[in-house]
Amino acid sequence: MSAISGNLIHRLTLYHCILNYTVNEQEFVSSNEIAAFLKIDDSQVRKDIAACGIQGLPKHGYKVFDLKKSIEKKLSFNEQTDIFVIGAGHLATALTQYADFKAYGINILALFDNDESKIGQMINGKRVFDINRLENLIERMKIDTVILALPPQNAQEMTNRLVKSGIKFIWNFTPCIIKVPDNVIVYYENIVSGFLQLKL
Amino acid sequence: MSAISGNLIHRLTLYHCILNYTVNEQEFVSSNEIAAFLKIDDSQVRKDIAACGIQGLPKHGYKVFDLKKSIEKKLSFNEQTDIFVIGAGHLATALTQYADFKAYGINILALFDNDESKIGQMINGKRVFDINRLENLIERMKIDTVILALPPQNAQEMTNRLVKSGIKFIWNFTPCIIKVPDNVIVYYENIVSGFLQLKL
DNA sequence: TAGATTGTTAATCGATTAACAATC
DNA sequence: TAGATTGTTAATCGATTAACAATC
Image 1: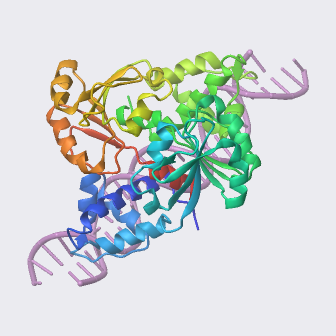
Image 2 (image 1 turned 180 degrees about the vertical axis):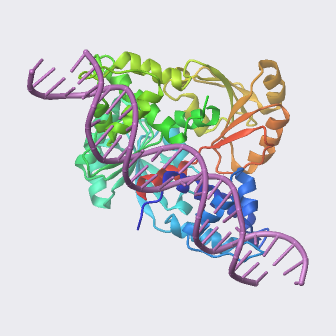
Image 3 (image 1 turned 30 degrees about the vertical axis):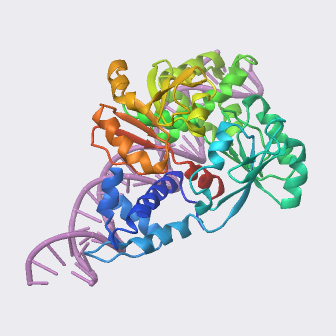
């Protein structure tokens, strides 16, 4: 299975978002309608949809429900990933409360922090654990994916602990470059870059 | 001036991040060193750097300080954008406290919310205003850019108000597609797409 | 000098756009 | 049928990678 490019992923999630609205409103949607929402080329929309392996109906468009399902399949929304959040600050909290992560296959199980006042609290139904229990729980629950959302000065040290515990995927929300072995994958969630794409 | 592609912007911000560490450690940095951090091609790093209009020194590499400055220039980090944050929840708070937004040209002036308990509070030195004062303050302070970080159900209605008030750039953190006129630019900060790029 | 690294060209690759026949 | 929309090919465009001469 060939990898899906970042741009395609981004567009498909936006199409999916549109379909969430329209699924209760109309049976069919055309490539033109979707393109108009996002102000992009309609022929690109058709290409993207074709990549999801679904067919439309000339003169009508695509069945909204089926199209939605096919995007979910293409983007593996049904394959749940159990995930720990490292840090329990505002960003971590915001992510934990984020609308319906679970619908996208993101299953947050718990948070970790070293702040006594946060340990033991519940955030949107998820417990904040003492960071000391990190290694133990990663092993016991067989976690391989984390969200890194802690102060930058601790990012590399924490990364080292995570890697040593067997973490393979790090979704990094800190504004830091972290060093990891070749078998560990990091995605840099670079907030500033979104702003620049808006303005430049 | 031709537009800078999203991927290039993303890479340049990561290079810049690396340079922040190395600027106090070493005078020169090679394309190979930068490439190794991010596990990308060194010849791509040189191409990207060339796009910033700076020259290196064969056998030594690039002067860290100069390279850092040239990326800042290319990405307009010095041109401050005054910005309002619509919403004052955890995400809005996290963004307002985000490490050094100002160093990237993002100057958050104030937040807005309709929650009585939040109005009047200070978040990282920025006041939370009553959402009723939005139009008035946009006009008075000549704001054209906002961060949209509020519950999805209010996104479109609030967008309409913003557009009517003259907002031209919307950095949208809600998981919603919003309709705007052609002269308004929206960037969809799609959190889920980051996760998918990590895993797919 | 010898060797490392840039700068740049050419080659490759992939993504986007245009066009239009096929289809319902 | 006439017309709208897909599906797909071809054309274009841009981004990435490879290669290597130029340079310090």
